[in-house]
Length: 205
Image (cartoon, rainbow, N blue to C red; front, side, top):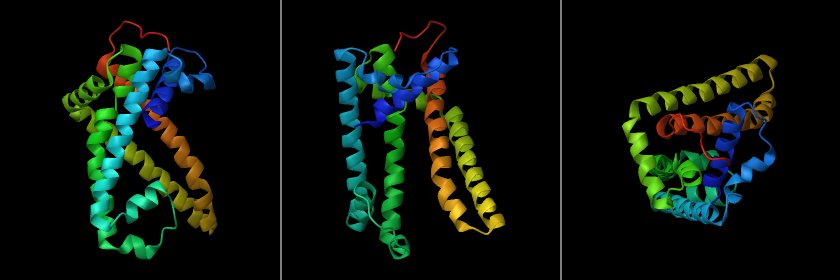
């Protein structure tokens, strides 16, 4: 249930930074400090996301008996034998394909609920329409970020090879991935701004 609120927190922090202010850590929980009505709407949005995500995982479980879903939701050891199974690979692809429309629906929804007071269900509709109408721009956006992550992987792999230490890859991957993910989710604010915000300032967080 937390991803929509967490996404909004990073969007709000990005907006503060864009305005020349230093975002304090408390802004990350701004979704729950904007009044009871907005907080309730964000909780509803989180519940809808949780239901949608569980449906995606449930659909993937039909392919492999729930191996991938269990690994993703509960955790466990990843083995080469498991990854080599065709049914597990199919489950991963099903999850990826079905998660794409889910992410589109929730892309702008947190910002619409929080800053514009749109109801959770309507925010999903408007988010989907905005992504569809700006398909070309979002395709470039996605390809650019894919390239950034690929370059990061190449740099870390090359560094590990030059140093002759595979542990460099293992140690460096997590902090680098966390940094890039924070940058990626922060960039969502600019897509929201360009789709929904005119020259009028947004309400304060």
